[in-house]
Amino acid sequence: MSMSMALIAIGAGIAALTGIGAGIGTGIATGKAVEAVSRQPEAKNDIISTLIIGCAFSEATAIYGLLVAIILLFVFAK
Image (tube, rainbow, N blue to C red; front, side, top):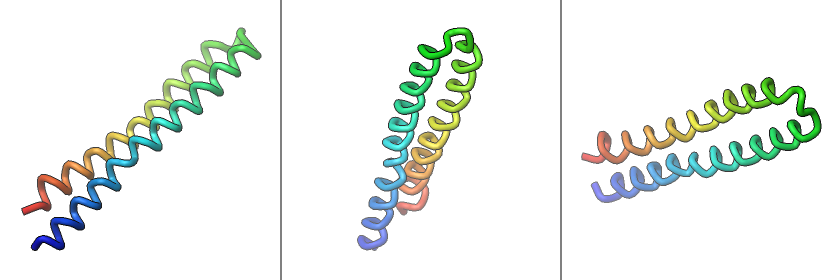
């Protein structure tokens, strides 16, 4: 029983690490968007809208990872 609890805890920790990837991805995308706007200010609206959509997808993966971690900890840990 304790071995399965340990594996569930390790799995939940790994699933929660998706937040790191989402943070790095959002940071890189924001930096590139700032560069793009500074090079072509007339395309600001298109760049910002694409950035918002990309950041939403990136953060969605972090939310999925958090959801998996919560499910592992509270549903499967019996």
